[in-house]
Each structure stands twice: as structure tokens, then as C-alpha cells.
Length: 309
Image (cartoon, rainbow, N blue to C red; front, side):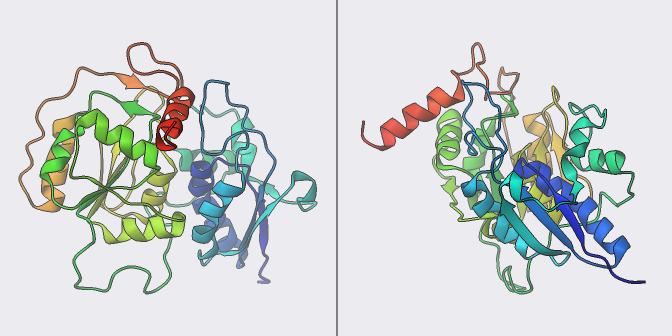
């Protein structure tokens, strides 16, 4: 059989790109070749005026591409990753954006499962599809840098989860944007949780690989954890349940106590979480009565404060 390299296009967002990779991997294997991915640099995000998103007005701008590209570049089934204007896309490609217009219910189900249904290709959800280069993690026998890493965006939140117990666990790090970290610690009165800055998704994946367990909500970060099948727990967002961990040591939770029991088992320590908070599910990227102002305004205030304004 003659090997064939496949060309794909995906406009983003980053989590959708990561969740498309098991399809890309399987289709490349079926052709006996490698895959190339083209990511357009000029697709508008079309978000509302009250919305802050790291990509700004673009689905994937230069900063987000610079973040994700190092992780994509080391995948053994990807030959090249391109970032070009829409006018510079190759004449023929497999359009990974097609799942958005395939008649699927995009408010429920697994995102990676959407690709199986949209493209009619079978691939295992429980098998890893993200890999690190050999020697990228810590050497065997060394203690992990963190017992627990948490990455929680200010979107897709269950505000009844009470994370204040994290201060009682040794070596907990928060992996995400600085304003997300500050919001998280302020909200739950945390002082011992460390911020863990990373330069790109490859460094983020290495941190996840080396920690004992990763905890997060629906986001590109959790997609990366799911792709590597590291021990992980997902803060479920029931109004739009589009992610669920599959394979390996994993869990999803809607109650604080349930998370505590899972972490007790994985970490081998007794964890007392205390009760849930009087909260609700909030997509805080939009205005939420009784929760917080629009995130864009909150971010502007945070920037002003950081700049001494």
C-alpha cells in the first residue's frame, strides 16, 4: 500500500483542535502516512462585546498559535503544522470544521465523539492521542513537582464546588492565566496554591505529565490532559456537557465531597473538603446576575490594577 499524507484544516478554538487529533491520528494511520494541519490566522471569533477571550477577535491569533504549536509539532503522526491566511490554504483539504455543520447537537456529548460521528471514522476514545518526546518528563523514581495541578478558567464553572480545602494539600499548583489564578485564590481564600506559569502547551503538558493528578473544568487545558490520559478529574458543567474524561485514572464531579474522595484515593491521604457552597452553574464569560460582572470588564480592571492605574 502506498502511503498518503493527509492535509487537514481547523479554524479553532484550541480545545476543538486538540479533540480533533484522535481523528487525525486514525485517518493518517489508515492511509499509512502522516498528517499536516493548516490553522487559518484570520477567522473572526464573533464573540459579543461583553466577552473577553485570550484569542481576542480571532479564533486562533498569533499568540494562541504560538502556544499550541510546540505541542502539535512533536506529535509523531503530524508532519507539519501551518499558520496561514485563509487565502493561502491549499486547494484541497479535509475540513475539520465540518462537525459544526453536520447536524450534531453541539451542546451535549463528547467533543471528540462529534468527530467520530461527523466523519464516520472509528477510533478509540480511551487511547491516548497526545505524546511527549522521550525524556520530556521527569526521570523514573523522582517525586513529581506537584501533587496536584488545577486549571480552572472563569468559564463553564460550577460555583457550588468549594475549593478552599486545597490549602490543606501539599504541593498544589494552578496552571493557567495569571488573572484566572488570582480570581481562583481570592474566591476560595487560598494562600498556599502556587501559580505555575508556562510558555506554551508543550511545557504545560510536561507539567501535567509530572504531577500526580490534574483537576480542571471544560477547557483546552483539560483536553490536553485527556489526550495524554494522565490521572485527572473534570469539574462537570451540566448545562453544556461537552467533555467527559475517558480512559486511564479519571473522574468527573458535581460535588465537593466527591472530588475530595477521588483525590484521597489518588494521593493516598485523608482529605476533608467541607460542604458545598450555595452556588449554581455559571458560564461567566457572559453577565451573570448575582455572580459577577462581564469578564471583559473584570479583566480590564485587573489589567489596570496590575499597571498601577
